[in-house]
Length: 294
Length: 295
Image 1 (tube, chains in turn orange, cyan):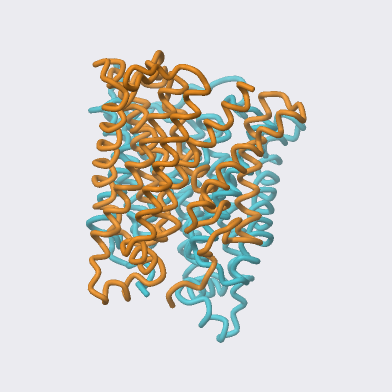
Image 2: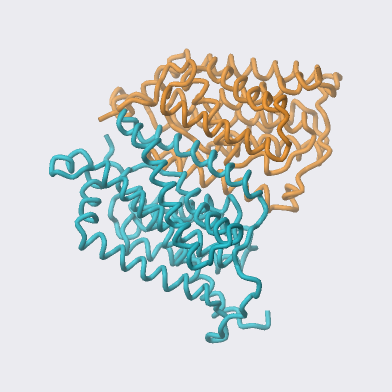
């Protein structure tokens, strides 16, 4: 039972991450490879605040969201000026820079040893220290992320985002400030990813930089693409499928050493298969497989 | 620190630069014809080293025989990826984004295949004795490092001649500038692209083998090398002259940078250079635009 709860909490974390990336990748059509970096920033801010200053959970959550948002702006403002694949490479670069800061700034982040003993959240006197309560906390945060994102994508702003995805120059010609809009949605996306980071750090109570690598970014991208870009429900479905699927391998009885590799091979293979035969994912409204803007 | 570090750093920087250069040339030949970031190229680099390890250490072939065989196997792997994944996607007119995602998937798949078969620990194909290296102006240079530098220079010269003198090289330039238009002049774009994958994969495997002879191998070595190659390509502006300069800039910046700050920041130095170039001089050193025409 505990095992099942654990899986559901992981699904909640990845649902938040993939919804946040979907805003930028699925709705606006800009693929970012730095989502795991914002996830990591959220986790580290919450952990460092709680460990060093013993601040309450809600304050840490808000701080993590704000700081990740600031980093989103710092990274987004310069790199969103760069087009297409070069933007991907730039975010790839930032992902690696942030990872090496987490990994090498030993006096501050603990380096490769990570940060152990992160206190569990306490909200208005309720201590969240078992799987059930984490499940509910995760659910609340995931539902918040979902509805917050839904508000954005169904608003006029959401329609403008889709317009940017379909034809950036045309949208600009309608008098929309595309550059500012892209930065804003990038910041929101980064801030939402931090929520998942705070949840992860307080749930596992231990973090180290290896949870926030490029491979993690690629995993989040896979969830968005396989679930369906441009559809928030698709991101939830993608998180359910991609978190559960490797767990099924456990029951086949693979040795642990191989299981990690098989898990990654599975989603790498799935990503290729989807690109070849169903590029819009399970329930994506927007297929990136389209001769775009000629 | 008794050794005079200054000449030694020059040697180290040169070796690093020349490795970057081969990787960059191998990646840029594919990028020029296909116009998307072929991330699975990282695995081709790694596979060169691991095929050599398999043939030489596990199957007992001699090193002289293993290296060409490993390069051939890597070429085969590169061509298979192109034939079974990228070509069908191009046929459907998939945009670069889809190809890029497919290549990320391929990378993850193959890199983990290598990890699963050989394990994540460091493997070596060097023979037992570590050679001390020759003294060279107060610095040491090992025979393998000399090999790296000479191979890289030969490869660069050959690539310049290839683009200038051979029919295939010229066709490649044609496909690079406009693959659709090149078809009208009787060029089979798919065949040219396949050739670019063959040559690019061969060079990447060669670079992988050279690196593994110098500093051993791990399953993830390729991604790092590839990223440096991409940085050099962008900073160099995708022409050979620019890429030579960019490789030297990066090699020296990384090695001298670690004099002032600690060595874990090597990658960060490279990426800071990349981001600065992307922002202020996206067309690279000598101003040849490699950006796609916007719209």
